[in-house]
Amino acid sequence: MSDKVLVLNATYEPLNVCTARRAIVLMLKQKAEAVEMSGRIFHSAENTFELSNVIKLSYYVRVPRSDRRRVSRRAVLARDNHRCQYCGSQTHLTIDHIIPKSRGGGCTWENIVTSCAPCNSRKGNRLPSEANMRLRTRPSPPEPLAFIYLAVSEIHRSWKRYLDYAVA
Image (cartoon, rainbow, N blue to C red):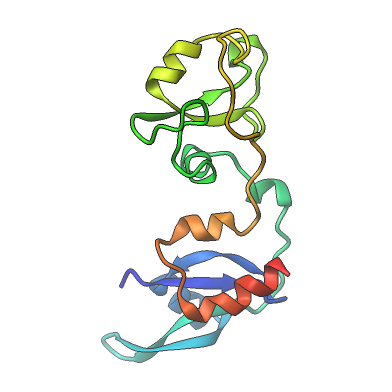
């Protein structure tokens, strides 16, 4: 049972994605309720459950914005469309600190970009301008819903209205 379920806050704000198994546990503990049913059935030894595509928490969860935008290699690669931000290559990808950590650069969205290994090696411990290299785009934090899109390979059609509402 590896189906993904969209989790909404009590205010219908998209929070994250969980497995169908986790969604059933949340509903059994009365911590969430089904919003959109999938039509699929899950059988346990004693019960039968209709699986949900979308659940809503029964209580409001305050989500600090800084936690939603945590920097990770996977998120940086996705933000940069899996392309080197120096040459555009899609192979041998790594991440690069624009201002190297050894020179005071931090692990922030604005200082980390996707880089292919040859460009990363060429740049080394220098600033892009010192290595005569240019960034293709200016790095910035991803949109809040980006992490939901990262969690799944395909967005279920029943999620669309909740995700569209969050953007509007």
